[in-house]
Image (tube, rainbow, N blue to C red):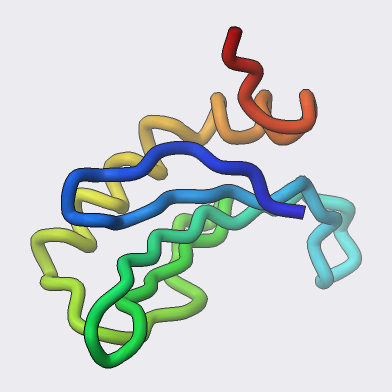
Amino acid sequence: MVYPFVKYSDGTEVVFSNIQVNENGDGDETLFVHFERPMEYGFDSVRFELPSYRITYKEGHYTDEEIELFRKVVEYGAPNFYMWAREGGIKIA
């Protein structure tokens, strides 16, 4: 399951996943934050894994500066992404 977070003016949409148990068997909780922008040729995409903040998927033409901005969004927003994932997404009135 993925939940919407935000859509930027350049068309980049950000979604985050539900919480999953880490595959390494230690019981750690993992989730993914995915950035994607439609382009003429397909999509620019980058996906971060929490809590490691490592990029698990990257395709297209996001610049290094854009990816660093996304990394900051993920790092600063990590507690909220976990909270919202537990709540089944962001509740907007």
